[in-house]
Image (tube, rainbow, N blue to C red):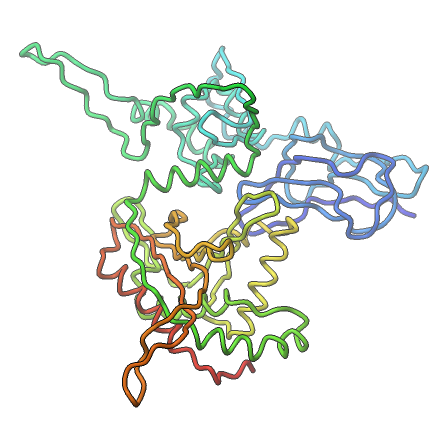
Length: 448
């Protein structure tokens, strides 16, 4: 067979490169069509690259830890016994002499001292090999690198971030200097005014005492990103949480009535999640000031309603795929979108653009048997809703003959919001409106 180049695939409009994290196949291994060959990581998501043909892995053109541009060949696949032909566009020489960073930084004087920077800092922030290489070349120490505001997933510093930082490095470094005491004319020490308003000083770390039998396990890369993102969210937004208990008996009865027919016709299950998303979308249309982000002292009002749905991975980590323009889907469309994203999340097949651009997030803590939770806002959004487990409870209901006690299906909704821009009235009315839509669900609703 003719030799075929395995190309680094396009992974979204905003992604131009990826880091090779793990080769799943070695040179000489037999490969099936669509079989995963290599694991890659971008600033937004980890994923696998499947083979576009069957054959034998003749040559790996990059090593683990290398950064590869979208469209570059990363491996050569052929038949057993073949030798890899030279590939000028993707040879190791091309990789090592890649001029991606040379042009923007050529006019910047290189420091004579450089610090070796690891993949992950003590704060849990991940740095790609390309970012580390630029930092070491420019003499940017880790403490300075930590001050650069990252636009990648979880606040990760991207190539663009560090290249934009370098030309204004002196000014930005000065702005990030912590307050130092100075002597006033009266002899009393007063702090200098700090110019930076974006960085939050990290608390002094206290050593953790180890006890006999303890085991130390390093966080994996995704867990470090999640940890950084959660801490950053708490530093950014003053969280307030409002709670409402909703009667979802009609929804439970309706789902029980249609789930067998739906599974037979569509070959997939219908869960409660798309119903919750439908109610949230309706409430966002009623209260568009929930569908916003904060940029400094400006409020960005989002035109699109993009709903993130938190999904637990087999590793125990969490990822939030996004249903773009969720208001354009009917219930069947939402069901298919939810199932597709959830399945591909579990199989590490999400594309970077599929976990970005969310404007509101739903997390289902009820799937773990929890009745309610206090979720952390997924920045730069300003609100998130947690839905708890559905439980049978005795409740007072109104009947034509007066009040009566009946068994009802109930659940708690927990709505956490950013109190900088969402006050209690809006936050409370929004979660109440979502509950109203759930309680008013038509038990005779047609799926098609």
